[in-house]
Image (cartoon, rainbow, N blue to C red; front, side, top):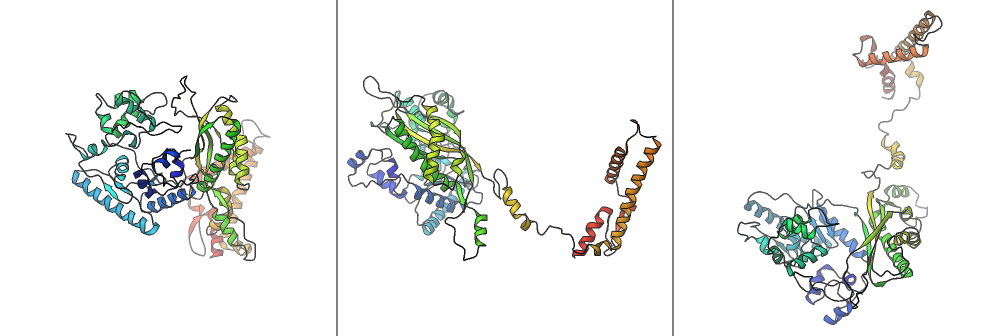
Length: 535
């Protein structure tokens, strides 16, 4: 078993001390104990405490950003954006000084209010800020000052980034680093041997890659491009080698884009073991979903406050989903078969299958174990059989289960749609100031002079329309296809009536209120009279 998961139990400020003693990620336990016999290994698979602490610290730092440009890049890393860098060098230097003072202030507030130390890096883009942040760990900050570019190449960015190993550059992944090392060495780089994939034994620096003859965006596109590669990977990678990063700091998100759980194995080749591991991953996935995608239902809490104190308290607070993952994804990494000489080629290729997320995962009445059993039987095992139709012969080194394609739930602030059930429940309270009710004493309103005038005018209009229709029908001699029927005539008269209202209102259609003297059309007299009855 590797030390990767166990190292995550250690606090972030201890990482520098651990690395000082020769320990690193993906290192075997026996090798770690051989290098450092006093090391204490603690099972660190449950990262709930650290995940909650990460959310708390990120929310704390985000409160200082007026534009919500605060991106959480991992458990222990947050990127923030303040202003735009432009103008001459002296202006850039002043902005970097201000950013350095702001970082010092934030670190001080984080230490005093959250009792947490951290490092900070200040520069003009994300990749430089991240790299310069690693210079003075575990509790300090570093600013990369100008010049950022020069004609002779003697600028601070080039001299700083050239000294980094190619795999340490943010944005350059594992496979890309493999190809770049092979480009410089003209052969694949050597790796640490072992069942778990270790680090490279041959380090290739950024400066070594930039000194390759005819290196450029076009050459890197031919080397790194291909099936499945992102469009423009050559230009992007070449920009990272020069310290150029145009990616923006993302907006702060309360909901993750996906929730993914995985584990690696020395050998996983039976269906019974697969079911066991899928069940463990499903339970962890459901707990993560409950932790990240559930919040207390404010309406349910408000309703419980109205219950008398003598009533028995509820067992648990009501929860509601703030987002729904629409897709369930299963990923595996088969281990290649052995070569004739007994060796095994390294493979980092993963295969995956996706399907709709079953609604049973959103059931909060059943416990996690029950839902996990159904999730494995009804969704994950069918996906696994699609990945590996054969009943045996496969040997897996990794299994990943993920909930993806997040859709925000309906809420008062947004989401896919407003929660219409809550709107109906609250409509009486929200619309009470705009609601018009009938007066209790209708006779008092009907006795008003304005109401009698309106009633008489409406009756005369209706009588004239009916008389006209009857007269036209009698003249037609019993009806004809060339003449409209009474119902058609009434329709035409109504249409003419509405068209005349679109024009300027005639003087005889305007009435004045006897109480206040307000001038209004005929149809508004009734509502105006009811308004007087309430005032």
